[in-house]
Length: 227
Image (cartoon, rainbow, N blue to C red; front, side):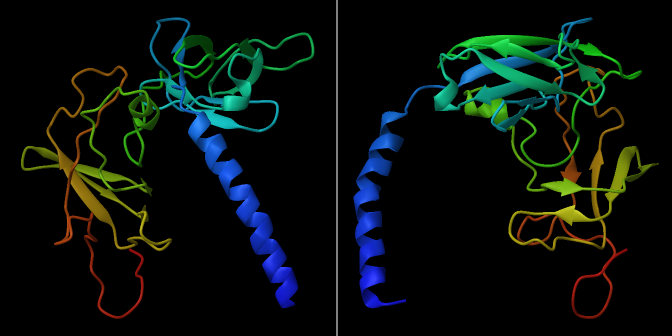
């Protein structure tokens, strides 16, 4: 690329920078709190997605909460497609399943969904951001992240008065390849005070010297291993 082209791009970016900073500093309003609840019992429903007409996706946390923060839609009557995998709303005349809300900065909205699942959804047990949306709103401030962003293939047994749990592939933030030789944790014999949301699982993970959830089945040799 010629020097002139590089210099022109630099000048173009330099002109855009103050405008970008001004735009970012101008938007300081609070998010709108959207709560999704089960129409039958009023329970908050985790893992319900609200999707706008231009593809913005928001997913409820374990408290059934979304911190809606799209500045272009604040104060605007907005259509949200409701995707709940066992929870949803009635179709409209065009066969579309959604609701219309007018989100306002610092305001609050509620969406009632109908359960088609046989089972009630209580919440996510593992992964990151179980209360991420609530925490954006200054709620659930006592919740602490485990450091585990995702895991699969749960095996569970009772051992020495506690519930012993092992997971397969486990994902962390620091690198795409996580732990493949199982991670583990224990809980008390009754990990939930009651089988109702919001679910706040308290796992006592087996950790390494760096306090990261460690592999439970070390295999000799170099590279990642898979148990």
